[in-house]
Image (cartoon, rainbow, N blue to C red; front, side, top):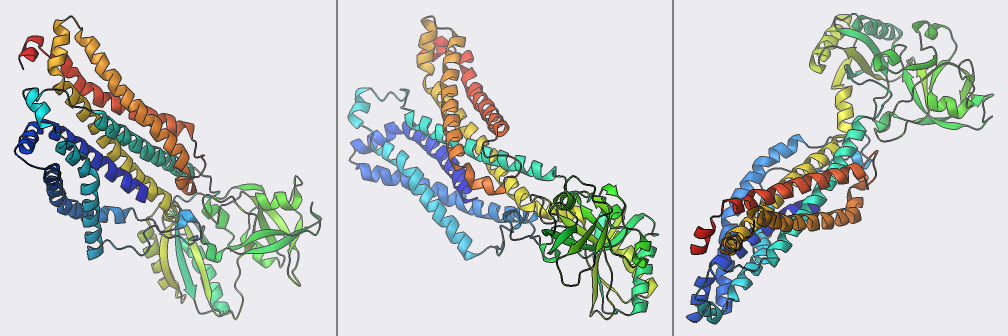
Length: 536
């Protein structure tokens, strides 16, 4: 982010420096007169720097006010902090940051303005102080002579290079975000609302009332399925693993590490988790006295390989652990993170232990209603049932998934904003250089036309020069982007840092903008009247 901000600031200042160089060339007659009258080069330099400082002083308050207003928009893109905060993509990049005006931000803005004034104003100031008064008098003060533009060419090339770097970074992050959003999570988050419920009453009658309540919730208009589970996707605090081994499996007694999830019988239907083989849990499984389990595809492969897992038995690596019958295999679910491969998982029927100090679980409601409407309906059902339960933290699964990808989304939005602004400024820089060249070579171009030059040929010559600037900036930007792309590699998923589609797309976009910015001012050549140009 710091590199992007500095790059954008450099492009803005390079444009201003380019304008000041052109303005200094137009004022070289004035500067020559000042030097002829006794002004020292240092005095002329200070005058131009003072003018630059005045520009900065006028722009600084506007920039600070605009920045504070934009802070509200930035806050709306603020990445959420999901439970898997140990992962880089699950961190809040603005943790601890405040968007309120404060003296530190004001001082930082003033310091940036001062540094920009000195760094980018010194070049035009030195150029203005080097005016040769004797040479200017000898040429009769010809103010229409073409000024050297090599410095401005260098500024334009650097602007295009920085814009290219930012566009490549933004493109890589956007492509990564697209890959994240296309990940098969193993469940369907659309239309599922989660609600945390808890109760301190663990008596037998309370457990019966809670089971009846879940049955009643399924009959609410607009609700298709209701289930409970102790774990919400991407909440690492509730995901824990145990060693489990297959009785007669491919690995013998060698245990594997598997996630353990206690769920209700309708959990898989509610979450939209597909059944691969066997069957799901049924309510009557709780009365059989046996221990049925459903396992994920990854667990089935690790435990039994290509052998059908349904009908086999497994046991946890715990003293006195009883055997459990595998009744079904379901698709793998990414519980830990969107970008982390699904782990082996074992699903058991969620039960309540008599005498437990507290009952707590998460309701999963598949519904056509919104989150607040679902919470209201569930709250009314709880009060009507008389079950002593509290309800909190109503979220949709779509919101949970969005929060998991929010940091990548935030980085992509910021980088794309910087990149598009940089591309616009770079295009303005090319436009300014070409327009300046055409306007100061009007007399020369008119003479060429009188001597037989074709106006379309002159247009092509100007376009060729502009295309060389664009090609140089693109080449430099691509090389630097390849060398520094590892800075954004931590935010990439599903693509490599050398993503051909991103690089080709950026080259096409920057090239098109650069050529358009060159053609618009260059076409003025077609309107030049040779006779009028020679009289200028």
